Amino acid sequence: MLPLRERIASTIRERGPISVAEFMELALYDPQYGYYTRSGRRSGKTGDFYTSVDVSPLFGELIAEQLAEMWPLVRAADDEGFDFVEAGAADGRLTRDILDALASRHPDLYRRTRVTLVERSAAARNAQVETLAHHAERLIASESAIPHAIKGAIVANELLDAIPAHVLEMTGEGVREVMVAEQDEVLIEITRAVSDPGLLADVPALGSGERFESSPARDAWIRGAADSLTRGFLLLFDYAYEPTPQHLERQPRGTLMSYRAHVASEDWLRDPGERDLTVHVNLAAVRRAASDAGLTTLGIVDQTYFLLGLGLADRLDPGSDARAVGRRVAARTLIMPGGLGDTMKAMLFSKGVHTATLRGIHSGRLT
Image (tube, rainbow, N blue to C red):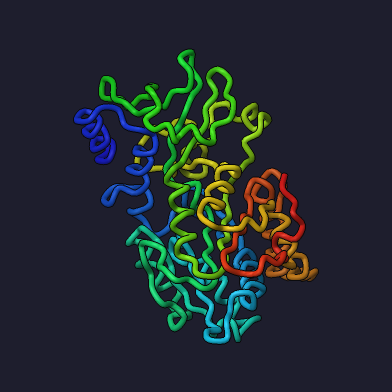
């Protein structure tokens, strides 16, 4: 029996069924056996899933262009420095790609950039030292929580989908909460009365058997990020959706999935600590949480339009050498419909700055 599975089962025996959110917290972030805490890197060819960072440095290069556009809106006469914070930074590869691009194309901003990486996994924080060796002079800190008084930008790529969520289901008794219980030494799902009425705040009309996720922890993370910003921007990338009737028709059992060796499964109770767990991001809930936290929503667009707006096409060489061909293939992957291009959304918020339309969200295109 897996050590974490036994730890979860022991908790259930002592306290009774636990919420899906608590199960996710243990499965992903248990200090000893959690999926993310045991490894410095989980994505890529040898991992369990791919992110835009794994595809190409192009992703980081274009985020660097967006940061360069943000800098004049943030800087003040008494402080021309720019705080760059990556939350959920893993081993630091995205920050490396961004800093490489700033050093090459925006050296003045590069010299003024103060970098903080935020990552819960000690193993990943240790890996950042090697990843960012060439940019050590820019790194202020590597922390487990977002620092305060940021004047610049907080960026997070595929972080929100790994924040634990509760699962609600419409039953013959009304909306109930899905809980994790144990029966004959097997982890199973049961439903019980909703543990907190606040979980129902963003739930749309559900049909019989339909499920929906609610994440107070995600709201709290957005609130914390907003509180940390003195002046600047919050830029998020994640698998996200609008909670429309059409969405519920496509995914009536919700979006909670597990990933192992690039294979998705709805059997999310299996092998806790050995597979990734994700829940897609409810854009309506994110907008509400951002507004409640004092952020201004500047725009939410498909990743395709974010990258194209920042000049993706201009970075592709028509040549036939391996590098040119590789970058064109990577660009197609980053903007491909049905893949990262439209399932991944770029979400941009601001606080305390002029709300000019930035290039990444100028198109306003969201599908």
